[in-house]
Image (cartoon, rainbow, N blue to C red; front, side, top):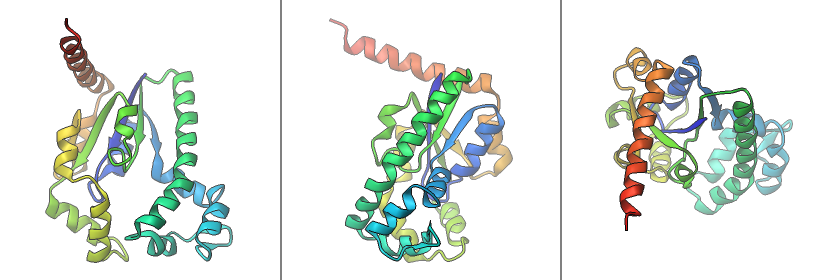
Length: 211
């Protein structure tokens, strides 16, 4: 089974692209969706203990929590120390189930893939990208989003140009969903592209270990 890490900066269309992979038969694990579930379950009391007043009726108030941690590296690190282990455990269960079901491709949708060093744990990386102006337009159309919040989020993320340079596959969403669908359509085409990546890596490793 090929494990593909899917990532992209805010507003690039990563969640939509993950759905396109699922439509083409890939098993997809959505880290954001997992966090949503955790915020209504196992993570809620832990977050409340670390950040009193950030839950309502046993569920994390994401807006209030974001107000507490965005722009505060220490608070953000504390939150990540709570949430990330729970997400990793959910990912492990997902991969075990995907292998058991005979899945050929498993996609891990991880927003901070490069930032957390998770790119070293997957077989290949797909980066979802669009132009900076399109990214800004999409993000600022979100309810409650401000320029200040947008800039704080961007400051935490690896620049898009660097992500594209480090990617094995780049999916451009700037031309709309149908164009993006064509880029990921067909399990056969995806596996062919990934095999090309693996062959190139194998050749590079062989050259590096040649006496």
